[in-house]
Image 1: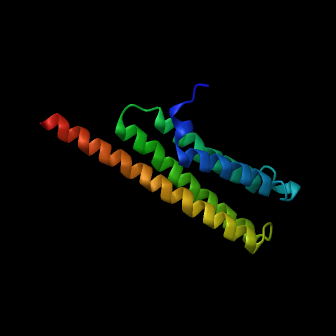
Image 2: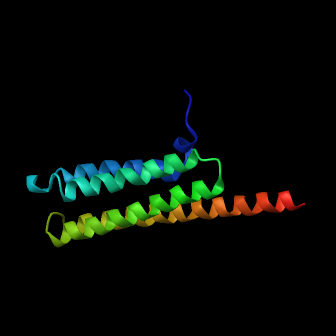
Image 3: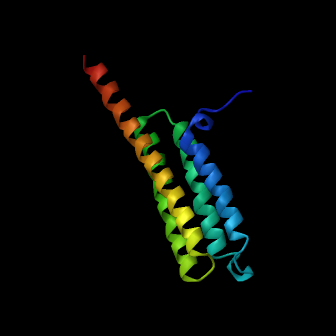
Length: 130
């Protein structure tokens, strides 16, 4: 079976799993949050794996890095919304700890992906100069 390049990235796999967890979590939210916090949480979670996929399809290293930066911003937006959910008593402290752990792993992986793009960009420039 053919796989797209982004499907091979561990950070994409991890962020896809994370998105499913966000959907499961938000099923417990009150109905009045359906178009508010629930929607925002789901959209920011989807944005992480979507930006990774889009970035992996870009030819220029600058474009790749831009989308990986967007993915990082989206995971930060999402954890902020998770914290607000705790403030509103929609989720437990246990939930927070699990999501913090996941976000920590994904953000670390995204940072490594961004650094990898920087290294490839630098080595390409060096090879062009020689």
